[in-house]
Length: 483
Image 1 (cartoon, rainbow, N blue to C red):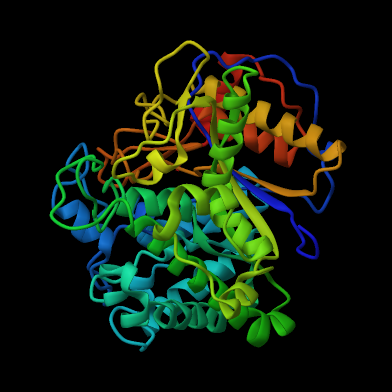
Image 2: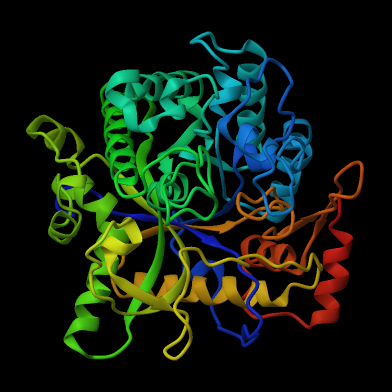
């Protein structure tokens, strides 16, 4: 990436993997550099709850979920109630041995409808960050918190950035975050997973504001254009990112000494065969998935294959925009989920959306059916405490990260998603990702450590190996680590 320092914070989704191995992989915490950080994370809307308290204004996700858009008809009104239980949760982080915690700051809560900061929220977040520091955690703030206030025209019509001054709104929100909390935050992420989030919002309409056009939407949409709006929204998001990075570098970074970057959604692609068409399709898949966001940040322009396939529907960068966005990251965060096999699919000649423009088929295995636009079931529907599959998954990723570093990769941290069960943006409360179980049927939303939490704790606090302890022993230990 040239002059750009490219180091990666891997926020790795802790999937339930049925066939994960429990073999001893034979590495310990001390095999990683001292400055390497291990952490976990949550995000504001999925964690906090308290949606109508202390002046918070409705957000886009409030409107979306209250309209019954979730598969289980749930909302994030309560979620894990982190707004009230954060002191308890910080204690759990300390007991677990987390070295860093990745979270987000809700725009709707910090600046409900004007540029007036909510004093109580500022005090609350100062206390939260102070408790994190006392517990030995570094704060890593990500753009998942940019769950925009419903009243902002910027969110209601992200595609009209030039009319509604969306970049200015987002930069003003970031300015407040930097000013109020920057001396306590080590790393900032402007936007979380813009590539998949924009497609979900403006192509297939499974995220707010739920815009799409036939035949591409997952549901019937009343407004939108799936063939055009995702590209416009992404373009404006990239420019908003660049604006925030410029602000931070000019106004805050010299004094606060933090770093700023972006997180992208990712899965790895393998060619279905060695045929030239499949090899080209695999590269095209990567260009559309990663290059859509990364090439402007590194080179100042979109991948050539996107220009060719999308044509005039892809907004061009002006010279000024290209210069602003090029190099606008200190680090790259990779949220990795799964891998697929890819083969060529001829480019449709009719109306196309993002997926059709990519012109590939993707499968979970070489002989299986083509994968859909989203892979569901990423967490476990079973909220058991005995999550040995998750331990195998995390351990295998950590081993691969260590191998990559030994081969020269500049990786600086690993974050397991998620610290506890949350309100999930696609499945509500039906999927469980947490190291800690949250009993959503319990009035106190009791937290209970899963086996994976105890395993992660042993690895971090006692330089434990990545091997699985005998299941009965770990189960007994996990049941004792309950809040």
